[in-house]
Amino acid sequence: SQQGEEDPQALSIQEGENATMNCSYKTSINNLQWYRQNSGRGLVHLILIRSNEREKHSGRLRVTLDTSKKSSSLLITASRAADTASYFCATALRGSNYKLTFGKGTLLTVNP
Amino acid sequence: GAGVSQSPSNKVTEKGKDVELRCDPISGHTALYWYRQRLGQGLEFLIYFQGNSAPDKSGLPSDRFSAERTGESVSTLTIQRTQQEDSAVYLCASSLAGTAQETQYFGPGTRLLVL
Image 1 (cartoon, chains in turn purple, green):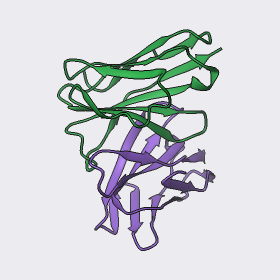
Image 2: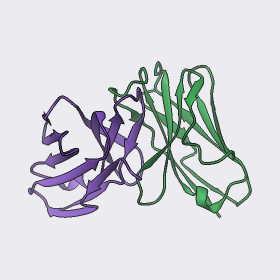
Image 3: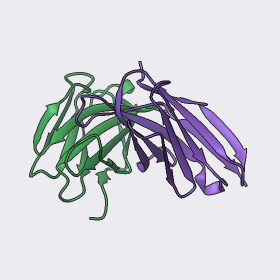
Image 4: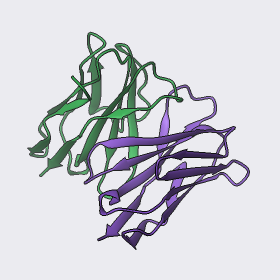
């Protein structure tokens, strides 16, 4: 079964609104990363949050991590049509030096 | 090269044929990863290279799949006797040293369709 599960599977919003995507995982992690994928092609790294961090910001992105609930959220503020993409969380399991385990992703559609 | 490149971009093949997918990582990156992504799904880990060695092949789905890396650079993923369930996008990524704290840089993928 998937280590990371994103929720919702799909999200449709209007330009200017905020988009929130959630990720839940099952086992202890070293860090959690969010990636973006356009049109089913290569992924682009957005942000990494370590297990001892609770919140991180990058531009219009805000990521939170709650290790007690084994969950993370990605907030995109003031969304733009260009933010339309699939967003994946990836977890680096504690004890794993290199391996990332990806969820199935959230498809975000931002309507102009 | 500025990023990870993969070739071909698209590959259509007949069931039973062999295919080779190529990945050129970012120069100087010692770690290289192959993933498979079926339609509407997340990424499945296939194999990890550290230099030219593959310490983790645990994700290869069957013995029809193999991969090699040479010169701590180019990697080739080979699928023998392709089956329709092999249809997917195959993504390659590289990272500097192969630690979980690093960003993985992805190529654009090869979309494989087995008829």
